[in-house]
Amino acid sequence: MATAAILAALVLSGLLTSGASAAGPTLPLPASMAAVGDSITQAASTGGSLGADYPQNSWSTGTSTSVNSHYLRLLALGAPISGANHNLSVSGAKMADLNAQMQAVVALPTGPDYLTVLIGGNDVCTDTAAGMTSVATFRAQLDAALATLKAGTPDTNLYVVSIPDVYQLWSLFKGDFWARFVWSVGNVCQSLLDNPTSTQEADVQRRQEVRQRNIDFNAQLAAACAAYGSRCLFDGNAVFNTQFAKSDVSGDYFHPSIAGQAKLASVSWAAGYAWGATPPPPDKPIWIGAMSSTTTSGRTWTATVTIAVTDGTGPVSGVVVAGTWSAGSGATSCTTGDDGTCAVKSSSLNKKTASVRFTVTSLTAPGFVYTPTANVVSSWLVTKP
Image (cartoon, rainbow, N blue to C red; front, side, top):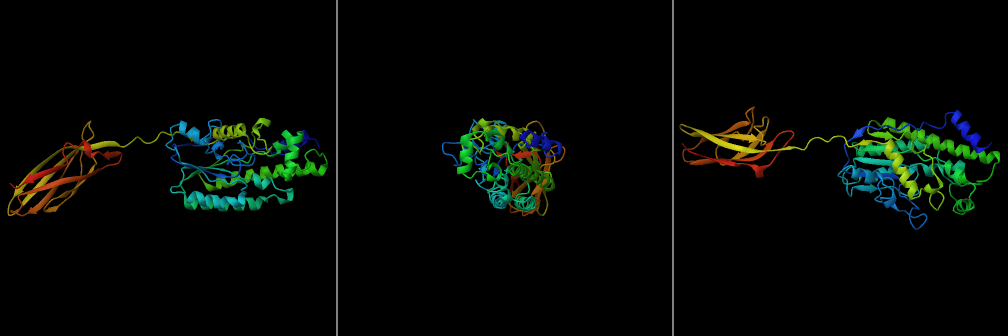
């Protein structure tokens, strides 16, 4: 069966999934991010040494302007994320290794706001087609890893990217002598790339089986992400459906090149979350605008101190004022009313107590921040009548 006929059959049987964008929800800009996965996310073979990792070129967390990773795009949007880009992916990793990577995510000092997941290529690309991970095992390992993440850092928003269409490697390079040489000598993805020029039915069917497993794995990624809940987004097979050119593949004829990493970053970004939801406004400063006092006298005497809170434009209600008395007993906190004032009282002061002082220690209200350096006055001395 010719290659075109195989692809046509896949399309007609519904095996090629939709290329529609994931149309992700809008999230506040993250303060930290991490990446898990395999050699693609480590940007293997994008530098001077084939097979070596060059994480600075990663589509996810990299710092290379030639790639323009998710990390750099978030920085450009103003995300307070500088230096908080943790690449925890491991070259050669399979789905069986994802749980350990999720444990590493959980072990970070703080759970990342954003996590990218791209893994599964090594479950497709094995020594033989029979050696590919089964779909059931793949899903069980994926579910276990996601459970680890949810238990350890439930507020992390994760983005699951589809496994690229590895069949394209064969389509692009089957006629290239050096590619065939490297595939053979390096034992590269032999489940797909063994006997690359063969048109024998067994080889044609083997390649089709590998591509179908690629598709099945992506279906499991989508289903597991949906089951995870609102904090997981799948890319809608955007990466799988992306057509790669020869220039997008590195000199090892397997991994993405710098151009391939850039394309991966661009495609996955477009299908991912929308960023830059309007953050809540910063807390507005408040301070003490004035303090005053009154006294009453009898067998003992009482001091009452009134505190006025302002934000510079007028009085602020609903502010909890807390402080300390230097003597006596009584209330040490109050809440401002509509006029922005409240009062605290120290009673049963002995006649021998010549004076008492109330010192404000805090002002608390939602949406406001206490700015003591702006206080007109911070404490008030009341003298015995």
